[in-house]
Length: 108
Image 1 (cartoon, helix red, strand yellow):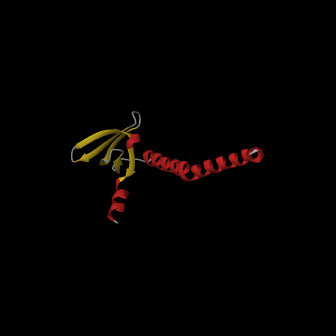
Image 2: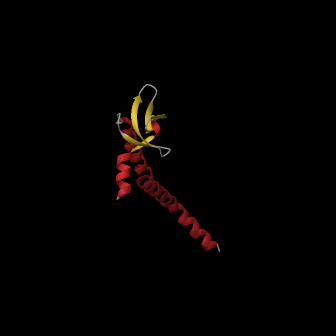
Image 3: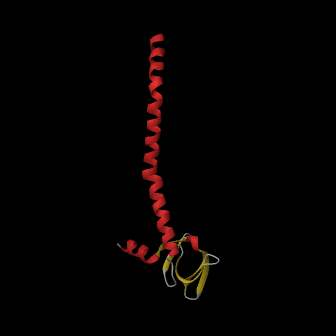
């Protein structure tokens, strides 16, 4: 019994370093497969929101398809025509994607 305790204590001294290496490896894997792709996606969405112009076909965060009619940069609002004569105002940060590229993907 004492031999097992002594063996466990001997392993414990070097085990701290392997634990740290494993934790660093887990963090690196999480960063490469989870955090980094999400940051790239957020950057692409921000670039799309900053490049909005009148007449663009867009999709909002709620799934509403429409055409940009006016952009108010001071209030950070976008006016979207969702049907003939029906215009809604949404926050610019809720505009996520180009509707024409979404429809091209769905038609394939």
